[in-house]
Each structure stands twice: as C-alpha cells, then as structure tokens.
Length: 214
Ligand SMILES: [Zn+2]
Image 1 (cartoon, protein in one colour):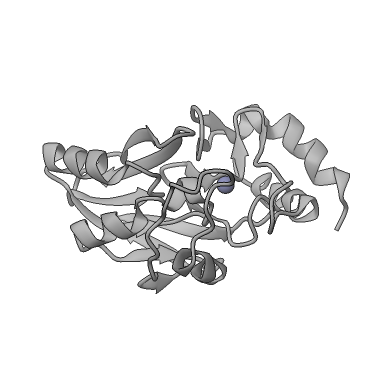
Image 2: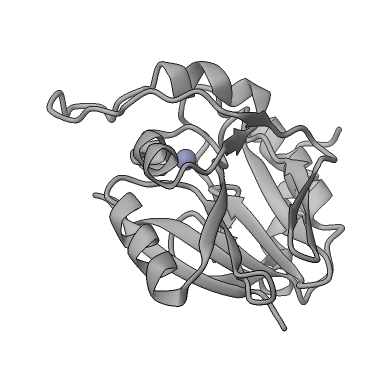
C-alpha cells in the first residue's frame, strides 16, 4: 500500500505540516510543526488510528517550528533535524514586528545529515541537505514513492526567499543542481502552497542552477 500524505496549512502564513502515513504499520512521520499544528496533527492521527513516530523539522524559521516543542511533548515522538538547526531550535528567532509571539525552545533527539535515511515501515526517506533559503534546511526524498518533502526549498513556480539571515543565492543554485537529478515524476510537497512535481518546475530550476556556476 502506498504512503498516505495529509497536509495541514497552519499558523499566520499557512505553513504546511505534513502527516506521512505508512498504512501497513500505521506509523506516521510529521514534517514540520507550524504554529497551531500540534492539535490538528494529533487529532488526525487519532482519527486514522496511526501513531506519530517521528517529527522532522526541515528548517528553523518560526513558521515551521512554532509547535515543535508541544508536538514532541504531547506525542512523545522524537524530533529530528539537521545539526545546523540546533542553535535556532534552542533559541528560536521570532517573527519580526510581533513581540507578543513566543516560540517554545526545543532540543532535537536525533540529528540528520545529508545521506542519512529515515525509515517508516518499508519506506526509506533519504535526507538531502538543501541549503539556500536556510543553511540548515533538509529535504526528505523517498525514491520508491517518488515524493520529496522540501520545506521552503522550492515551491510551485519558484524557490524560497534568499533575503533572510542564513540564506544564500549561491547555495540555492547548488541545491537546484542536486534536485535536478531527481526524476520528473517526483511530487514535491512544499512548505507553503500546493504540491507540484520536479518535471513541472524543471525549466526555472535549470535557469537558477546555471545562474551561479560551481
Ligand atoms: Zn523558511
């Protein structure tokens, strides 16, 4: 049986949290924990009778980690992310201009490096370090299911903004060069907006990839 993927746009800028379910084991992993996502994710997991076994954080922008500490505490699931994400998870950066907003710090239980594998039932999600929008950003690629969870690496029609601290247009170009190696059929589940495919985004990705030669 194929993976089941449910998306939940949460928080003030509709950041996608994903519940990725292996129907054979009834185990699930969560990709990103935006503000106000912990409740709906757990409700959905309960309704479907699945257990959240792991929380993966793609990168540490506030809109992706707002409920990370709460979700980890309430589910007991370990939290995993790239080593470069640790300082900002433990000392979250707040959205500009909103002093009322707080983010609870959290320490990861596992660190994910480029080339590591996250297992969910028979599925093997490869960790790809995809810096550019954020230096610590990782994507999860499952070649048999042909899915990529990329955080803010790429969206339908473009890549994650590079005018933020820790962002780099050169790294974005290098990341696109790597993701261009994926087959056209791969469905991309982004941090914002609707899913797309590598094939659909390939034309602009080629342009970006060649804009800043390695
Ligand atoms: Zn971001």
